[in-house]
Image 1: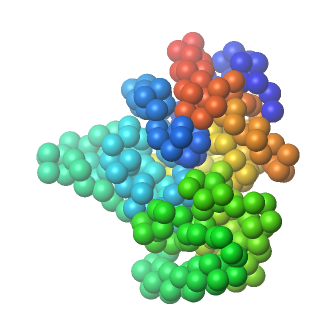
Image 2: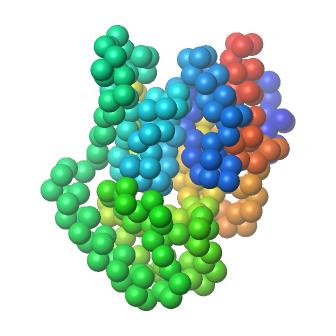
Amino acid sequence: MTPLHRLPRDAWAGVWGVFTDIDDTLTTAGVITDEALAALAKLDAAGVTVIPITGRPAGWSAPFALAWPVRAIVAENGAVALHRANMASDGTAALAGKDSDDQLVKTYQADPVTRAANYRRLQQVAECLLREVPGSTLARDSAGRETDIAVDHGEFTRLDPEQIDAVVRIMRREGLNVSVSSIHINGWIGEHDKWQGACWITRELLGHELPAEIERWIYVGDSTNDQVMFQHFRHSVGVANIRHFENQLQHRPRHVTQSERGAGFAEVADRLLADRDTS
């Protein structure tokens, strides 16, 4: 991982979009800071498309999809996208009446019948986990989850490595896909993940094929569940706190910021805007 300040000048001059994780990437101590929010606003004002993609649930993400200056939020590791109803297909604010300003559109990858069946199965697995792993608890945001389950290991409850491994093992035994973030262990049914979800939402909302335009995008993350994105994005950045997980990463970001969490994201935004200003 090369320090971001060593990135060659104008290396990001052709970038027009940013995908980013949320927890411990945009947020600090669970809250988005003024610095990170200002960075999002500067990117938006410069015409840069920003799409956070997270393991957080749709219910948790909804107010931020309305309040933050972002094109959309992709939640539950790629399963569902949320965006404001008054957004045009090119990402600009559509001409709409005031009544539509706060309307939120949710788009799912799976059909309603499949989602209902998967939800029932996921609740069965959740009961199994709580029974078989002493000390395990579901994430406090579980009420807002529609397509996955999450066990808290670092937000409000601390699980040791053996407990985390046990949760992962049981989820996989029960046929779930698994991802471990800096705070949660997520399990879901389906082939989606952050990368597949990013490709899906880019195609659905912007009409672009992400793999063909990967040089035009940056990804910013902080943890092991961002590895699939680090693998695919040539312009990938870890905020400094990713060093806590460095030994666990098979796929590392190409660059790393000096600052952690939201301040690190602001570094990325400033560097991108500087390159665009000189192009």
